[in-house]
Image 1 (tube, rainbow, N blue to C red):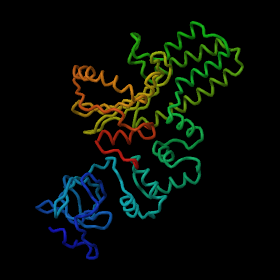
Image 2: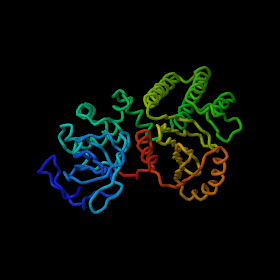
Image 3: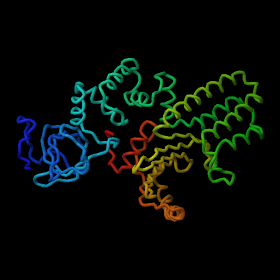
Image 4: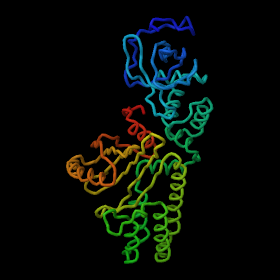
Length: 393
């Protein structure tokens, strides 16, 4: 089968030379024009209407006319080599591909529709006419919400309310709800009174010190945090009744806390998200833990965000594959301290080896600085499946 051969599907379709803008590593949506014969070759129609000969890896059950997503592995003078991508792969999608996908579902290829489609694909949702129309309805009814936020809330079946939007934004900007915000609330309730020993003891127990001999892994749970917070609030209500607004202050805080718990529960099918009150060398703040479970051959991802007084915010993005190999991506606001972190890597390598894991990759300040609950699962797939970061994703 030669590249110059006319496709039997349409005599009007032009056959493009191989000097097309598809390079090794590109991911595109194509339509199968012929079924593979004994040679394994097929003809594929690309978004720009080019029909090219190709040898596909996988996809033996494909039928003529099927649409598939492929990754280009390479090419010669007369054919392309590519692999079929699994349906749940996170993809780098060009505007040509978006327009192509929209035309398949009879949706106008307007700029607005392409932006909506891109967000749908980023969130690994099904691209349907119904979903696009539903999102456009939300845009009309909630003009103050960003498109990213609307698609995120829709995917996770969250109520479209100002309360949810406010809490989501606060969580995404890492507002230290269980850290500095809580300490500020307690300071307002004390209203100039000194902390007594009982209150100090409750606060010390509430904020976890990972390096302390009293630290227990079971403390790193939402239930443990809520139980300790309930005891703390009960003590405040019983011993600081002199503050006339104490019930209102605690009530407002608890209402926001309940919304955060509802959001975490809605996210649990896609990711685990945990806010952890921590004491790192006297810095009382809130760490964040994110986890995306691996499915089948895919890798498990963990992101830990830790605020410190000396190093600024530390980020640890960890990828674990089914062979117990670990990739560690470290970020630090104070880049001068990276050299100190590097000194501990060999020790970490040995410790992981002792428990059956192998540290295979370490990078420094190579991960994005804006990782939050809005985009963690996207970055997880991009890192875990070794797809290059792309600003559009």
